[in-house]
Amino acid sequence: MFFPILKAQSTKSLTRSVGYLHAQPKRVRGLVRDPATFLQSPCGKAYDIQSTSSLKTYLGEEYALDDNLLLQVLTHKSFAHGMKPFNEKLSVHGSQFLKHKSAIHTVNSEKGISALGSLESRKTLSTDILAAFVKQQGFADVIYWKKRDDSITDPTQSGENSIKAGVLEALIGALLVTRGAGVAEKFVFEKLLSENSKDSLVNIVRAQA
Image (cartoon, rainbow, N blue to C red; front, top):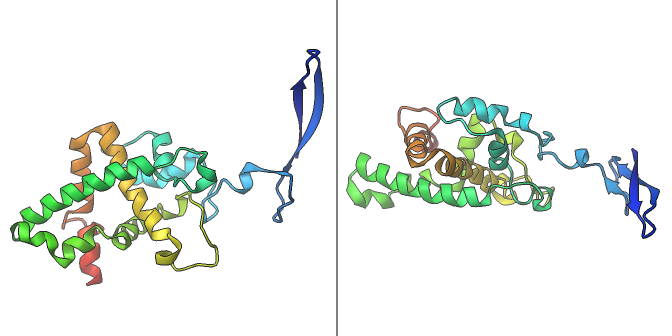
């Protein structure tokens, strides 16, 4: 695809040059790549607002978030060289909030503070369990990130599970920052830590035991 580029000269006149967007499978050194060829998830999903639909459906009206914020939640800093809004800071907020609420849940539902070191309580917040939750909810395919090495297919070795876990933590962080601690806390207790929810972190751990 060719497109004109106008350049201003010192004489205040304009000159016309030609750029080229390269969209072929094989890279050609020196040519500008068509953004559509790389602004995709590893599963080939285009980077756009429409990709947030599955996450929006999961959240419903009760935990609704702005579309652009949802897209940020789904985007890791490795994607597009960090040129798109990414979820790192939201993930940090969400991670700390989840740890706090999980500790409260463990103490209240088990045998006091000594239960904090139990295997189940530790596994509940593990990277693999958080990643399994994201995969079960159906929005893993629209997580935007760049693989370090395409030859590594094991999600525990490729970084994929860490990316998925970060998305869940970023989602909690987004609720905390924009909807407040009350809404974020309700989400964590009802969606992630409740024994009454078959897809909760708690029940994923128990199902794998």
